[in-house]
Length: 323
Image (cartoon, rainbow, N blue to C red; front, side, top):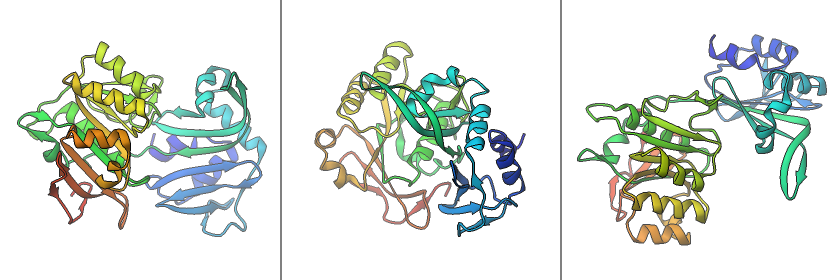
């Protein structure tokens, strides 16, 4: 089954027919959005297109297919395999991961209990975020995070949408499997939002390497502690750390002799210095490498690589993924 067939089979029959006729390159499609009584939209290369009943992509909305409530209902039946009840836990989180690692975001009426979301009903909004791997995109970064046979504590700093998750995923894969004379190491991944491994029925759909253990949909702080106690990782990787609890758990991991790979939102190292907990970790030089990403011509540019003291090892020239 090719990528296009894998994706379109989760949609209602009419939407499936429309997408099947589309000449969109599904290797470049980022999102497919369904909203009841609203246009069928497709995001490709960061541009939004409406899709006509004939499958033609248009930047204007006039004449595009209007998604019906029945198509939303039918799509949810395919996604849940006719049993939404079986996906109650996923509904609480607001997304379901389908085969291939694609993430289906959901919105509708939430049912709360004691300030916690118990379930969701009257689902009227669906956002299918297509899973993208860029194998080898970490090639040019690997020499900077590996020294004398050891992984270095590394923090990837990036504004939203600049490829930090894609880069971290490939670094995990290379560290786990081994590459270019580097031996593979045991990696523990806390995948709170199911984006690194994109697990489907417990099995990662993305390639995270042969020595990687994944805690899927687990809170980062709790998951880091669990992995240290149970799986004996040599490296722990987390995406989008931000809360005080996350950072305290990261510090614990590092104090246990386990190496850490993490990403955080930020524009540069100076931006992080303004955040109290991170400021303290930076001052104590706990991270041995900082990889700073930036959006220029397209996502995926490494603007700088810095050592623990903020000394520039790479930059200001840009380095594209796979360069």
